[in-house]
Image (cartoon, rainbow, N blue to C red):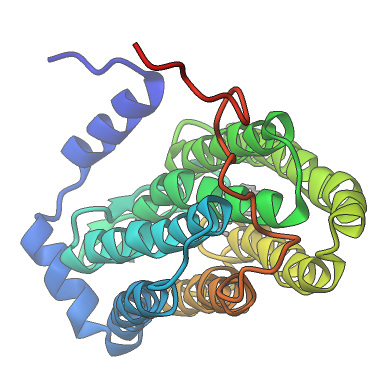
Length: 289
Ligand code: RET
């Protein structure tokens, strides 16, 4: 079967090129206790968060409050899958860096190349839209803006994946990084300008400003870590980079989730949609046949 997209082709090519078997990668992860812990801690936290939301949200009745709670839960559903992929060695590869890269010529477990956790970039494609759906709904924004940020975060993550997997040229790796960063700035703009103003009108400004700081500050950490980590200037080693991402994930996912969830469970009027929410013709009662 031929791959349908250039990204799929790149992933397939790199996987075939990678000399280590999945079992060897699995062993490599568990030989490095710090690296393994950075994955396993997140599996545990995602599990606790999923159960926490199920418990806290058990009495929710309002449809809007429920959508927010489900979006929050889906962030951790993606996360537990993402970290299971990394832990099992399924979404890791040893990738040779292009000429001129600071990690050029490095070896990992006897193989030429550096350990690349490409599963992270892939799974952010699925988790970050749920963060933005929850934030946008809390701000009281409209679906045009919410879906715009979702499209841009998907574009940001896929181009970030391309940056990590490009082995042909150093310049092209950074070019992908630049495109991804531009998409990222679109999201930051919507959060800081549009949603901040909308949250003020909606009456959720207090909660939104806490979530905004956690999200914007936390999200800026990812490109900084990418640039400093083994993928970029290689100032930080793989285990430190991995811990960095795991800590950022704790802030941008689990802490954001619980801050939002504790507000939503009271179903304040600034959050709720009422019985007619989602009906195309509110107060329309179908006639009996
Ligand atoms: C990359 C590298 C390319 C440039 C930029 C990046 C930004 C990544 C971000 C990730 C956020 C992830 C979250 C995950 C939670 O599940 C891809 C690192 C701008 C902002 C919040």
